[in-house]
Image (cartoon, rainbow, N blue to C red; front, side, top):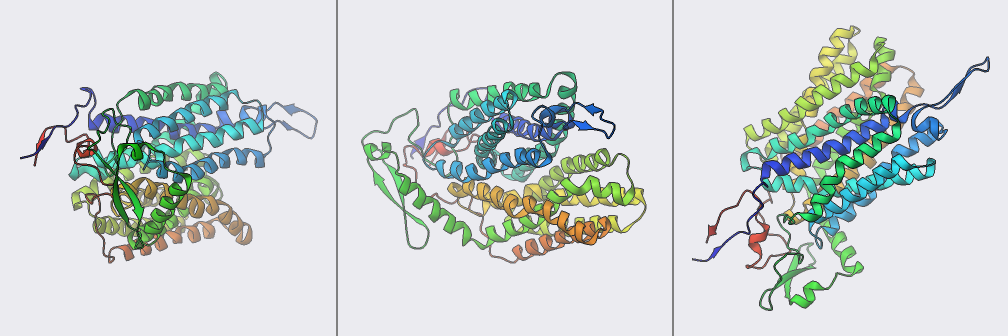
Length: 493
């Protein structure tokens, strides 16, 4: 009988507290996104009437005298930082403890957000917004794998649903928060307060004993390796897998060269691109996000023009927020009830998106505002039920060590090919046909494409790789360090 005793965790630290911490961080990330889009923070530029009377501008746009193009660049700068840094943090997770990487990212986010409040012109705030995206990239890539590791087996998708529920909630709170702070204090205070709220979590990422992510072994452990202990180093094989070799402690301490890091990254990318389950899942997610992104941008304007809503922003935003929260939670709990497997996830994705598309499509066919609201709310509730299942597939169709890269490339793909091009393309379509109802119907039809792609996934041979050994094998002595937080008792083999 060989026994191994797990290193004791801090008495206050549990898996549920980890989920709560990550949810608060995720909430703050999206509060920032909502705040910068709010009228109180974003503001408006100065305007002059024909009579010569001019009104002073407000917010970022007014203080820096930005035109609409420059105002849009500020938003895009955040996305550039996020998309460029996500794969980098995912690759670094193989050589640096992922929990420490989250701490680094949150620190960058904190200082960059504070910098937004101290910015002096268009270029300074643009650079700061780009760095905010860089800081968030580490959390986006690594938080979901940590939650997946520590969630109870029969509640994994529910926990992911709770985590992703913070997206619509955070954006909604950000709108209100930005408006209040902008009107009561000044738009600069909004960023300063956000930075202060995030600072404790950035510090926590450094001072607390780092957590191990399943499938990884790092040399940064408090207990050093002895001369008899070895750590496996991955070398790529022709089939895209990795063959391990044991190196001494001196070799394990040496930092991997840039060439080795790039080689590993491209080998991992090859594995992802050859994984049919992953590709089908991401293609469906891109089509889905294409519609959701355009809805969020053009929805209020389409609602105003089709149904002559005086409060289109509030009406459309309220429906999206409420349905986003309840739909995301419902999707996670539903998959757990069905038994959380990849095949069941695809079934839920295909069915929920198909019926959601039917209700959303039908909503735009009716002339009655009240019928539209009822049908569209049901449709969005079903559509948002996909958030937890689609990310569950991203996490479980790859080996544990591939999860950060899987999440990072998912984020990159759905933005580059999904919501980023959808808004201008829908604008071009509307300019061409000049009919918002027809434009909305054509856009909603893309949801049927997403449902069809995910339907194909049901028939693919899928294997849940969550419990597969990682290519970076952990030595027998150190293997206990990689066991999730839920296993906090002594185990015997």
